[in-house]
Image (cartoon, rainbow, N blue to C red; front, side, top):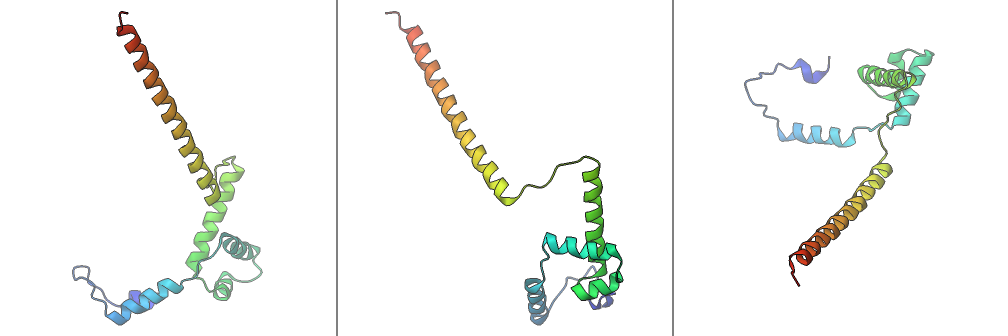
Length: 132
């Protein structure tokens, strides 16, 4: 159990953190390690190999065991979906940018076509109304 959860808290009373606690919390958030996908995969595969205990692996990597198990579950679920034939994946940032640019240019083409069609219809109705 973490030290944070051992202190009794009242749900009715609003949390009044001291400025020092807020500063410590902000520093912890700012310095929290962000693990890349490659790091997560490497750690999960090391755990699956079983050469050392999960606890020892987590201590060495500086992560909580619960975090390891959640990564492991995500990894195995993704593998299961892939083997079942689900090939959908998340788009990369570059792919998203390219798709947005393509959508923008297609919208411009549609807008130009709609404007041309409107002008053509307008010229057709004016030509039909003119008896001369």
